[in-house]
Length: 111
Length: 112
Image 1 (cartoon, each protein chain N blue to C red):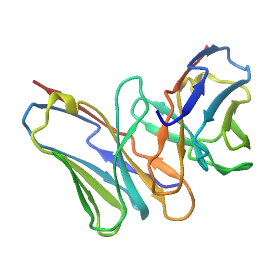
Image 2: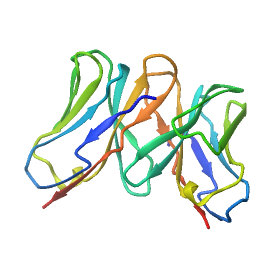
Image 3: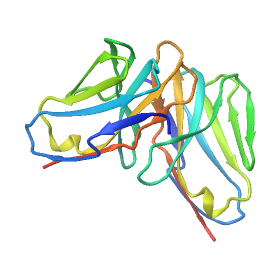
């Protein structure tokens, strides 16, 4: 069974601060995705990274896939209250069709 | 909207009763997934399907069964509901691997 560990579980910061969320595993993934979930809704995709060492930017969000394709990070620059939500990483198993999720990071950005 | 509907949206049932949740898609996507979401656990994979009548177990499949007799419908059955199965259940669909998963609105199930 693959296990994706996310850290931290909870993050409360002031508007304007930077933060990084980590997603780690001992398993290799063919791709890693990051989702954001609002209360009462299903998760919505932010990004997919496929190549080891890949870096993708989405406005103030930067996503990185580890060289060995076992880990990923999400960095938010100058966080805003609108960034508040649950962030989930999800890994595609290297063999098979499973998409497994980490436990999530609850982010709260205070104004 | 990704054309995915879960039903019912809310259900309260008694311990020991069978329960079936339905996921219906209009997108003709090959892959369908059932997850449960509990505080502190993120989304945990229960079962998934990679085609009609092709299903496999996820991380937390004990106590659950699934069926997919046609592309558009993926059913999750709790044969004999227990209080530990109180949760929010999400269905997701995907066209191919490594692509975006689209989620339904979720079903809140309470077993009393």
